[in-house]
Image 1 (tube, helix red, strand yellow):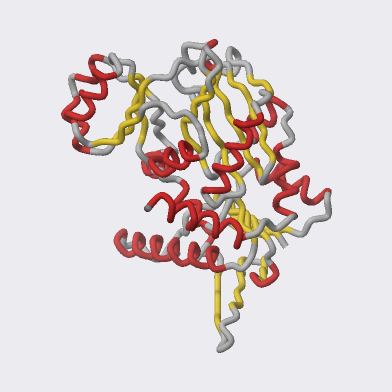
Image 2: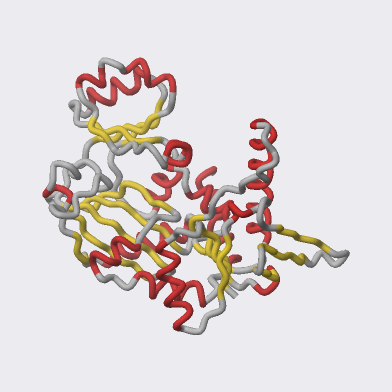
Length: 340
């Protein structure tokens, strides 16, 4: 049985669920936002150390021992019971419940897509991503992570002012994502006048990479689906394609060189994942430059615009119960190598 952890309004899961149903696959979906106010999650261990667990939510009953694959897709954050009104207490219960259910999902003896939550969390660290991307052979843009105004100014001068800034982690989007967005920005001369503010919070600075096209590469198991985004056709999207301008930016399938495709699969595997979305730039002279990887990135919009059969590949992966042990060993090996 496939257990899908996601919010009720996840159209990607709606789409994949229809395909799973057509294939006769057994699956259930559960949103941890219903815990503990509308659902109970229990795990027990006997003297033999064998775990037993269950989810009970309304008419839903899930025996966790029957789960063969966990899809940690877009789960909501646990919501405390409404009769708990004290903000500090609600915050404590929310954080405790979040910790608890993450522990439960990590402990399940089954395949996990894209990986167990602890592995996904580790894969989000951008400095580690760049180190592993370089290790598998990708070209990187010169990059600086810093809270030092002096380091920033030296980097800015070294690259003749051709520099962009990015968020150092996912915290902004998780805290403010419903109301605010922070895109990749070109560092302007006006920004340089506020260089001292860099000391307040870490920032990523990168040398600007000239673009012919941008690539969104989705890796599902060992299958690779690359889409080209003609972001340079619109001033709105030229520095960050997430400033969508679908009427002006063409999306189409992109054949990758074999060595780039192999590096994409290797990077995903070395991060301990079996799924990931990679952002890259193809420069005017044809170089492929790695930017970052999202271990749980969106893909349905690319599938709809290009016809790439990503959801079919996702169904194949979920029904195959990807090996947790194999992914965990790779993640441990990569972390060990990075620390050496």
